[in-house]
Length: 228
Image (cartoon, rainbow, N blue to C red; front, side, top):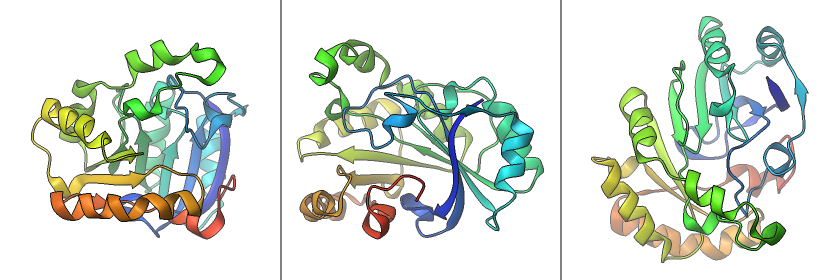
């Protein structure tokens, strides 16, 4: 499978924020988010083709017992099932970070599902040539529900402005019963200034709704730096 990078850091987002983890970034994505912070795995996918055994061996060089499979979109890789079961056999806690548009049978301890809102659609980037496909593929309520029913989960939404809550509420209504504390709101931004500007009103929404505020700890610590 095509791998953009394997690196050791802390989990910066969600319920496992702060936990030392090895990240396996799969290259390739079926979406084109305008604010994507890993364009080298989506807009311009880079990487090298690795056998699954080689990926597991490389992850084993680090002391962490948590592995995060991220992207791009890891669920579009044909080898994702084999990779996750190899990590399971090796005794890792497995987080899969996905937009929740594609499903395969996988081994997973935490499904970190990040449905993409309309604020992600690249209407102007590259003359909008990806906008129609992105809008068509970015939400799949039945796939999201399947992740929720099969695994421990969190639903992570990138919010750009308060009006985004209308779309989030509509999607939650389609999905069905969702525990509010498993809904994470994360301010849009790839630098500390943008995150700080949006965080106060996002926090107030979380307080009012019982949702969880999702910081981006790695951005606050390291900035928008690859492999950290």
